[in-house]
Image 1: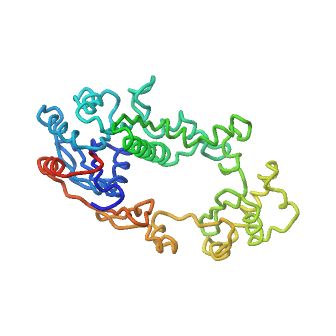
Image 2: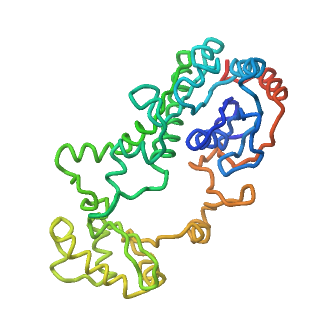
Image 3: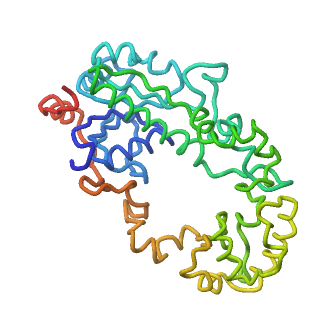
Length: 364
């Protein structure tokens, strides 16, 4: 394996959502990720399954539990996303695993966290972001909260904070020589993503009425506008120089536009004017009108259109994988870049022999 994490050994307990997404990123960056699948695993490869070796075990069988514990002794990281207490009941809790390998980073991914009144209850992304304040803050004035796919809880507040915790723990281990437990909770991560908005609200700089603030579609200079052909343009001309360029393209020359950005009371009327303007021309027309203009105006692309956009083609943003399309590895490193790789399932004995024979500086 190549990449900045080459030599890092990761055990991934098979699951759904944020855990596999985090493991995918580790594998993309060169980590040797071994997924521990159920005995009745689905052999198909999904979009976030890439780069793994996979072995099937039955954790109700003592011999399979012992096999996994042998792998634990050589692993750097273990990722699990079960409800609190599940790994303990399987005989694979952090006390047992860290007792076998004091350098292990035991990374736990849950919605509610390892403690608290909701810790052992069911939930999904929408539930975690609802109590973190993120869901209630997204949407238009007078409308229901908008569900932002499962990006904020599962992936932004979940996977990315799990990865951050793992990297922090690995760095600390380089000084102490000891592993630790990472308690990554989607509700914690989603709340963390809302740091600026929590603070702004607490000091009176953000209205609790969604859809009326600068960044939530309340401002006329930060919103999405429909075009004559049913397309959409995204406008984000916050800074004065971008606002001036935006006005120039649209011909907004009257004095009523001079201080409109700072006068919240004027936003609804100014928005009506811009809505009407954008509806007079097609999306293609507006793309050409703003081409080369620093006004922070871009087309809203469908998933089908993303690969064909000029900038995305230049960046090779979308790649083929497993008969479909996936985004490229991110972020991009200059000297040790990651890569999208497929790995065939391995026999458990092969993985164990490989890990027992290899020498990894990360594991010493």
